[in-house]
Amino acid sequence: MAKDDYNVIVFKILIYLYAVLKRITVFDINELKMAVGGINENYLNDLLEMMQKEGFIDCLFFAYASY
Image (tube, rainbow, N blue to C red):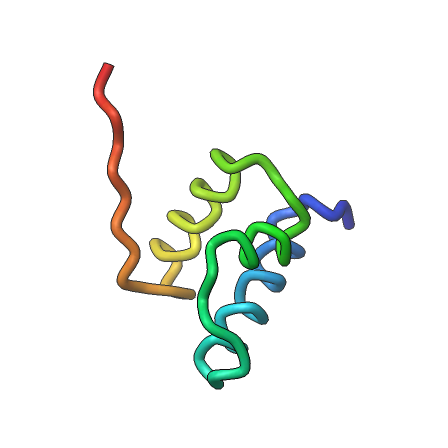
């Protein structure tokens, strides 16, 4: 599996969010980005949105710029 494969990144995100839930760390977007391996920010946003739609996470709000 590639390091930017969906399942790999979802696993890394869930591990990070679990650490936040358990109060092992405080949420920091830069730490999350480092935890997932520095993938493209747009790809990360797409993955977070997909994870929310699939019920893995909730309470995220996405804003889209209009052109």
